[in-house]
Image (cartoon, rainbow over all chains, first blue to last red; front, side, top):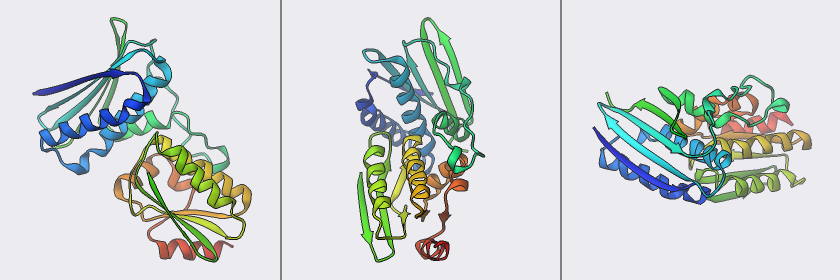
Length: 135
Length: 115
């Protein structure tokens, strides 16, 4: 079981650094390139959510864990309580004229990952998303 | 992100390259809207052969463009989606609200028969 953590300010400009952190972890663990997409998406969607809901001046901690072929991505922040798993699902059956974009990011993360869980603990939001990438 | 543009008499083909993420989406959306606003052509096809990644922010650009094309009476379709990008279009329902073709030949044929 090996874990890596990185803390950055809650600013959208930090996304490229977080992506590099993810790619370094992927290479360090020799994980298949074709399995990285759901984690890149979770990183972007959940980090952008924290930036949008938590406001600036706060920090965000991202962690990655690989154990027995399962990778777990975690993101924690000290912003106001916000559980994105409680957002209503997007109207994926709606026609073009009726479609909006709200809620799409979290919906995609939930569909692409095996598990997504939210906890509020000690004044922090903690969201984890995990998926089996090796068998 | 780099976005290639190929114009012929009937169609503008837009070729996004690399990652269509939160940072790249506004510029890409502007490229699509400009191509759709060009009244001398019948429509726009986005050839996604070199598109590696799309997030919900990238989907937003496609949605805005599809709606603009519908209002303008122009064809708007996609082709050549890589598997990861295709999965995002399928899970979001976007491959049901805008035409997604296997390749550029199929997309051009659909444009020709739609107008």
